[in-house]
Amino acid sequence: MTAPTAAPTTATNRDPVQFTGFPALRAEVRAALARPARQQPPWPDEEEVRAARLELAARPPLVTAEEVDRLTEELAAVARGEAFLLQGGDCAETFADNTEAHLRGNLATIRAMAATVGGPTGLPIVLVGRLAGQFAKPRSSDVDALGLPAYRGDIVNGFDPDPAARTPRPQRLLAAYAHAASALNLVRALRAGPPVYASHEALLLDYEQALLRVDGAAERPRLFAASGHMLWVGERTRQLDGAHVALAELIANPIGLKLGPGTTPEQAVQYVRRLDPQRRPGRLTLIARMGHRRIRELLPPIIAAVTATGHQVIWQNDPMHGNTHESASGYKTRRFEHIVEEVHGFFAVHRRMGTHPGGIHLEFTGDDVTECLGGPQPLTEADLPGRYETACDPRLNRAQAAVLAARLAELIRG
Image 1: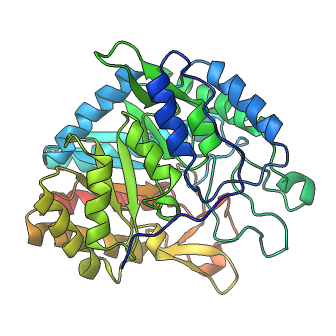
Image 2: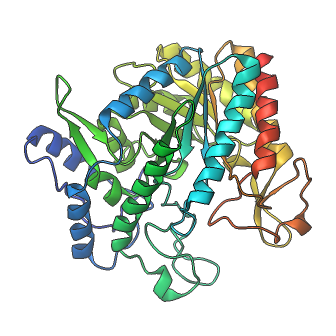
Image 3: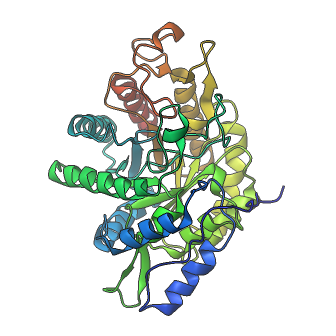
């Protein structure tokens, strides 16, 4: 099976608008962005998009190169088997929920999970939130069930089901930056214990390229993404000939890569060689999202092929996206027991192969939502309408996340 290829895009011309003092870097970015790109919005006015990019390029970075390097060092310990990566938060951040109460709830949840996992196991826990940038979402169709343009996240258009709200608006790029900045300010102000780093899917290329910055303090000028500490390339945009992988190659940040059930061992090796050419532990995290029924079958040959290359990657499990289904009442949901079963499979595979199950990647919230079935309550399909509040995919609530953290601690202890 050959690697997935990128389809042509009609998105706006993404010629880089910065790096005039670094012509070589500018040329590399231009070449990466000239590649085909999937999942980009059909902006109605390309001049408005360019104006928004110009304004973003002039704004301060959201994160610093020093913070990015600190996270890479912590992730290197995970790659060596000396720590565990706990990553999670909202499926899709929204501007309306970017409140102190919501952020406090999510931070309290991930820190409580870290205490539950790290206390009994003695493993240091690296905390990475899906926060301060998770505003864009890939979609399986350009239109929804009502025939309207698909909701692509608050950074692109509105959730309300009417044509005006669903029209992509470039000014939302600037609003997303402002919301990300305010979220990071709160995260830094509430620091108690280990830091919580910010991550998101590097999906919307107009936003990502405008927030590229050059680290002039390094021996050689290097490029880093100032939109977040860690970025990942999603299952729908991991084309080897595409712009997303090409851009990820250029930046110094830690990179994650989602690997779905269609990934072959040969593809995984190509990704590793492209995204971790210097063989730096902590640079690349491979995020398996295979589903609870197939992870024991599909993951071992990928681990074997990558291990044979000598690259020291982080192996992480996303037990959410391979276990999504539609309920009889039409709600997108996940069963808690399926999530737990995939995690068990992930650990079982690594134990059998002698490799380190290095992390977990979850969608959760500190709110008492009713989006995933089962768990300690347990929630049934009749409970889904009660507090189904996600803007995209279903999240674990606080109680479900706590139970899963306890299961993780048991699995790590063996």
